[in-house]
Structure formats: C-alpha cells, structure tokens
Image (cartoon, rainbow, N blue to C red; front, side, top):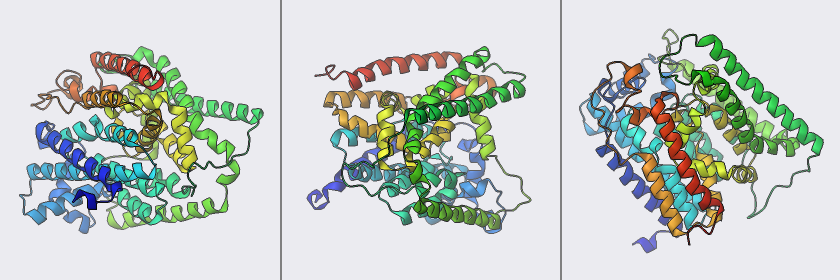
Length: 494
C-alpha cells in the first residue's frame, strides 16, 4: 500500500504520525495549569467563547478578542458536533485535540517544505526534531492548552510553505485566517506578501551589484546608530517606569550590562539580514513590489474594516497588543535580566537555536538567496525576540529553524550526531518530566519564582528565578560545547 504513495509524501506522513503521537502523549501525560480550571489569564475569554460563540453573532466582541476568535470557534464547532458538555473541562480537551491536529498538520507540511528545499534525509530529520521536539510546541501548550499559540504557529508555517511555493492564493487565505488567530498577524506577514519569492532555477543566485567600501561603512554606522537609539529608548523607559523593583528582578544593577548585550545582539544578528537590502536596493523599489505593497495595504485595511463591523466599540479590549506596547515590552523587559530573552528562547525552542547562532551568516545568506522578504521577516523576529516569553515570536520563528536545518543538511551529520541532537532536543523539551504543579499559587509573584512553578516559568525569560537563570545558562554552555564540535569539528564522531 505504501508503494502507491508518492515518495515525496513518505516523510510527510511519517512526520505527521510521529508529531501526533508525541503531542498526544504530552497532552495525556502532562499537567494542566491549576488556575481557573486550565483557562488561566487570557485563556479565560478564549474558553468562554468556545463554550458560547453567540457574542460573535451579536457583535459583542472587543477589538482584541476578534483577532483571537478562530481557535475558540474551531473548538466550539467540535464541541457542538460531538454533543460534548459545554464546560471548561470539555473545552480544555477540545483545545488539546486542536493542538494535536495543528502540530500534525505542521509536521506534514514540513515534509513537503523539505522536499521543496531539496533537503537530504539528515536535513529532514534534524529539521523535524528542531521544529517539533521542543518545549514551545509540545510541553507548553499541554500546560496552557487554551492559548492560541499553536494554531498561530501552524498558520505561520503554512504561510512560509505557500511563500516558498510561490502560491499567492494559499498565502492570502492563511493571512486572513491568521488575522483571526493572532494579533497583528497580517502586519508581520507583509514582507512575505510584498516580496514574492524569486523563481530561481536550481542553484541559481540572484546577481547583486558590488557594494563599495564607503557604502558598507555608511551602512554599518547607520545600523549601529539605529540600534543605539532603539536600545537607549528602552534604557530611558526602564529608569523612568520601574521605580520600584520586585524580588524577581534580582539583576537590577546589571541593567547597563543588559544594555550593551542588547546592542551587540541586535547589531550582529541584523547585519547579515539587512545587508542584502543595500546590495539590492534598486530592486526593492521595483514596480512589481510597489504593486504588491498596494495590494497588501488593501488587504490590511479591508480586514481592519471587517473587524470594525464585528466588534462593539463600546467594549474595552480584554487585553492590549498594539505595536507600541510590543515595542515597549521588548526594549524594557530585555534590560531587566542580562540576555534572559536569549536564554529563554534557546530553552524553549531547543538546541537548534544554538546551531543557528553558530551558522548565522550562512543561515541569513540562505534566506537572502530565496527572496528579499525573508530577511526582513526574520529581522522583525530579532527585534521582537527581546520580549522574553518565547511565545511572543511563535509566528516568526519558523524561517530561522527551517534554514538552520538547511545548513545542517550541508554538514552531512552522521547518524550518531543526529541521535545526539535528538536526545538533546528531547531533554530540552521537558515532555518527559512530571512537574507536580497541583495547586494554584497563593502569591504568584513569590510562588512563580519557586519550585515546582519554576519548571515552567524557568523558561519564561524574566520570570526565571536566580537559580534557574544560572542553571539554564550552564546547560546552554555545555550543550553549545557539544554542538560546536559537531558543527565545526567533523572528526569528533566517527
């Protein structure tokens, strides 16, 4: 029977089955946050809407919830079709089933994407492990099941696939669905829509005019000045907004260190991404991209006009998620603990991010060869990654992981190295661990900094306690030593 399935689908089906099994096991084995019956924080309104969708049809949603309504709608549809009891328990089960289906679909699409990128078996397997065997995609959504993160990730992954396939229709459909799943989804997808992937022949590289040394210096200085202004605004906001620091900000005196770490991180991560726009500056303003930009503006304002018809302007937003607030969160939260955002992202998405750091220039170059859209898309991820909770970049992380897998494929890791990488990713994911978080916190600001809550919040940037901060840092260092030798010393494992 399997012989009748096209060979290109073998990996896709295998990956989908493995991902579904992993996600199912994690959801069955793992705990659910013991706050509000699992509908903690923002998830309270998502659960309420899954139980009762009638406010949508009566125009009684606020401007925030309308951009998160799709996952609740899918769960609500499932509850009504199955005749399940409309309560929190059934809703949590519904969200978990949605997550399993979304992760399985993403894994299936990864198999197709790997074929599109012409990856060998090493790249396909490492990419699957790096993408799906992680805390962010397995353990966290089982603990916080009623959030919209996994649905948003799947839609962003589909957007990347349609982008690589040059499928505008599929990309637009996904962008529309994403608009009702994750706030500002349409905004973040703009680079992919405007800068359509080049139709390149195999191994072809777009010809770029040479760049003079003077232009390189001007570009470097301009980028550095921009980074300094960006980070300085955060420094100013912190000093003026955080007059009283609570106990978790144990590294308050290290804010100047954080400031310079942020500058170095943004500059060196952004330079290889943005340099392509200097080399191909004339192409950026070509007529085809201007036309696509205008079409995207119609799509953007059209969806916002639709929102205005569906929401009740008299209702205050149930949460806030504007570009200004995201900017403030990034530039301030990143200063409170030195590189806590980087530590949290690596622990959440796994060891593949360490390899991405080692191979960053090659990863960036690989994206540049695909299109002008991907570098700017990932640049947005770099800026947004300063906001410590890794779920903040869940819709932007995929290209980084995918093109790191592309570069690992070129290294031709041996089977033993792939096994080591898989074991490390499994350990980082924490899907094997029972946390024993059974009671709601008495005092969140204190309890979240203590065990067992630190098993979860120890991955959440500034919510790391002092112990977990240094434990995570040590784990990352030891992992980096192993992966550095696997990446650069081909004699390590024979």
